[in-house]
Image (cartoon, rainbow, N blue to C red; front, side):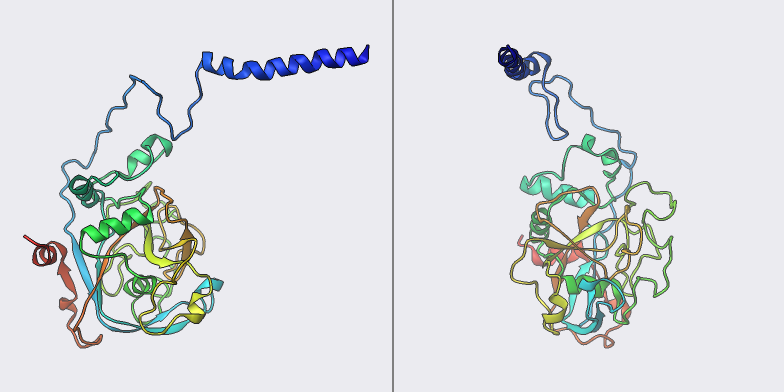
Length: 314
């Protein structure tokens, strides 16, 4: 008798499980944040851009002269050690993070995929689309392809750190004393819920004039991540490790809190990852330049549009 009851209960369970897909079909499937309803007529209307009349920020590159700088620190994370003096050849780097406006020109010219996930996936997604806000929702490959299109490349990790830190070993663009409102972080109410238009925080400017290294958005750089690379890398123009699982991210972003806001901090992420807190900037090698200290400060800035008109084929 007990065995018969058990068989009946088991049969009901099997029938219930078999019916679940049918019920789901009849009721409709619940979509994940990544999916669009097939055949839906509810087309989302484009959001009103409050910066529609804002002029795009001028593209500029800042030349970082050849010479030594202090990389890493002994007092922080394990992967930031040892602190060493590294020599880099001259290079130029974007003064600002690549903006939405600049990236849109790339998309229109090449047909490359647009940045990111649907804005509705992130509650703040619609708030990071200003023409002068840094482009986000771009993978490492997206960033590298944009730089190639511009005739540039992603900066190496060492180049990024020197451009933001200067050559005197400081931990923040403004010096060695922490300044809670020095950059666009999540530490204080600074008037920006998400990323700010590039160059908005004057304190977040390196000794070379490169903006937003400490805050705004985290940035992809060229290198594969190696936790112990600082111990084994060469002291002259250290390249990226030959391979890896993660790409390096540098700098802080508007969601950054705690002690990981210093310029020496290293982060890592899978290269195909895209997020509303991650952007990038480009760099380019320079040749024939003198060592640091032999050029005047007003010779360190170059208009990127002018450079492109000289180098691009007509």
